[in-house]
Image (tube, rainbow, N blue to C red; front, side, top):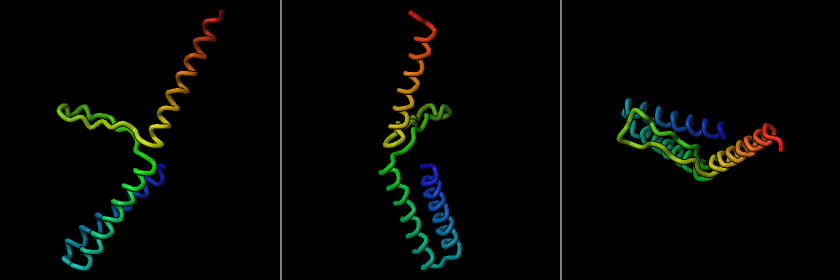
Amino acid sequence: LEEANEAATQAQAEAVAAAEEAIRTGADADIAEANRLRDVADKARSDLEARLGSPAVEDDPSTEDIDESKAATGVYATFETQLEEANDIRSSFIFELSHPV
């Protein structure tokens, strides 16, 4: 998952760099190609998130008037749920061991 996310991020960064270079040089064909690449990279990231979901995002405490938090979705939500369940089982097991009947 992390590798796919990194690849999508890299593709987006390269598309943005190509677009900036095309705009700087003013080449219309290059601008069109850079925009096409940016659109492909954006779609790749969107498709990746649609299929796999996205990780949770915590709220930024420095922006009190805006809540940037976002719940995990897809595979990420499943992992979080399973981790919580495993931690609950572990806690119960430790409690049982420390409080024999």
